[in-house]
Length: 362
Image (cartoon, rainbow, N blue to C red; front, top):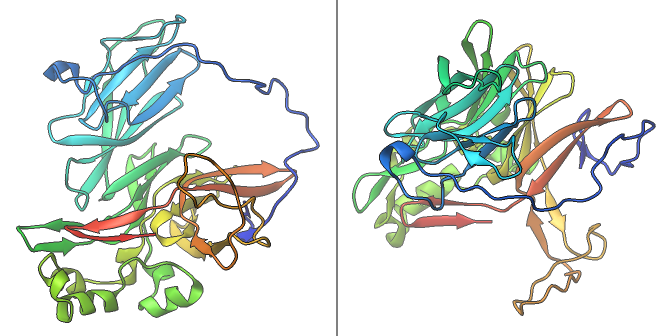
């Protein structure tokens, strides 16, 4: 957990001066509903048919995105939920990266299937109402950056933030060519339907060494590409980094993913899982303010954890491991306020990069 004011590690008391009314005390299973890939194409049920989920508590409808570019609408007004006929196909070749309901609109960020380096788009749909249910209808569309990953509306629903991961991808034949655009963040003004791009060039700097000195993880720095191309016979048969080297900037190695808004909407935070860092964006100026490395997690007795299970024996026995550390890799992030102070909480999921047959892991 971090204090957002200085982005320094902090462990506050989660008890506040205000009592939490109606907090859940338990969770129980009620029902399960299966959603199709795309009922219009008679596509089968299976993995990838329920990738993202957003729920409307006022009208008791849920929206589910599939990796095949279909948005299902599920009716939760009855104990046993059912898939309605109010869903919509986003178009051939498109996939929904994320979706969120805010105010009267459902926002969906889409990309091209199999092409993470191409620009995406933010789509706005009118939400389904209980009084007059009708199929999802698209209202507007705004372009965003390459490889969009996540979206999150601001607390007042006036701005929609989109993280453009800009994840590198290999194209070509047996020896593929790496194409890797810069990561960025798009801030879309709902009223004007216009987008501002937050470049990461300022916080990335002009060389890898500055980021590395600060503790930001760079999975494939420029020097590594030079080595693989010029000195590694094995990698020469797998990936060609010539084009990526020609267009290389440190920002091409920065990949913003999960997003969190400060409660007052003045700041936006993006988790950079592969970089083990958090990006702070000043919303008013649409600029990247700073990049904060999360450092290493110490799994020894002084690391502040219960330990780690390192034995594959179908049992879970947590033990401290002296002199062993791992990178923090925030795959999810939330911002919340306790007694006037904003905190960030992250979950580390671990990640890797694959370029053709080449792979890096952490």
